[in-house]
Image (cartoon, rainbow, N blue to C red; front, side):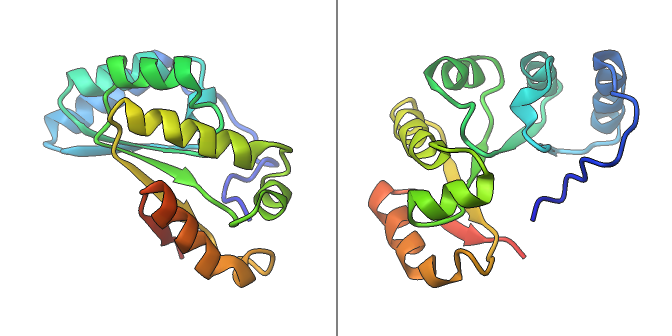
Length: 157
């Protein structure tokens, strides 16, 4: 389900190496940058890296599962990174389905709560979903939910 293969092990990239990479990309004229993961907010230097990317002039998109974007982190994201777009994962129209896919109890409710707050502070938001056997019967409901909360939804191939 998730493209992040937890069996693969390697060395973590240092913040300095990321900064060098971003500086090189900026020098090459790259305009946009997507910060994703796994969950990008779990990276210990996420806000420093995001602020550096902003300083370099990138149009930034953040792809998150939405759970760590509580009030404190959302305010910090807005102030330090100010991404053009934040994309979050929606895995079902109901808590049972979403939480079954994330394997995190309460993740559906936290996602919806965080979306509500993020909308109030002016983020551009989008929901992404992957079609699975567990959520295929909820597609219409997922679009209806997205319409109710005022956030566009797309299914990623």
